[in-house]
Image (cartoon, rainbow, N blue to C red; front, side):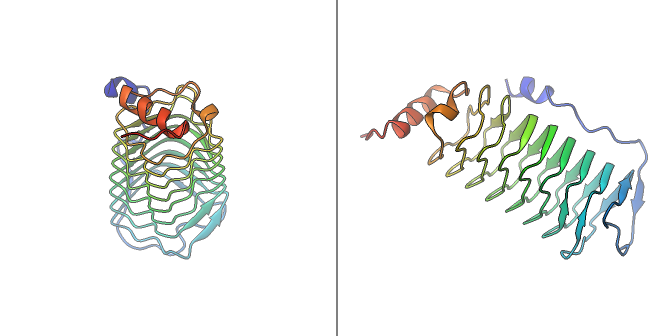
Length: 219
């Protein structure tokens, strides 16, 4: 079942040969920048970056640090982040298409008010991340730590959370029709009964959610 769900996500398309950035370049990210066809390995992006309206097309980031950067209202298309740190990064109001975040740290990162399609988060640490009011089509989360992540008002119809830790995550007013939560930990999840209408859960999750939403005492 997991493989079928993962195969619905279109993978990022990258050129066979990317331009490798081997030394630190000053002001590589600025307002209205276009970053295309680049490969960054163990690259440190200064945390004081504040930029908007940029385009990031067909890039690969390996073991890079982008903590606390503010790259908003940007277009990200066909990018891969492998083993990167994006703690407290701000990508609000951006558009994401065919993106992968693998084994990366997204602790406290914000994607609020962003849109996109074909996003994969694999073994990512997304604790306290902000996905409020996002609209992601074909989003796939596998083995991610999403404790206390905020999905309030998000459109997650058709998204998949496979074997994720969603303890204390916030899903109030989210659209969850067709959202698959099977095999994920939903302990303490915050959501209204009407938001769960049409969501896909397994037997144990259904028993827990029923008791939670009906305020039943289980002994």
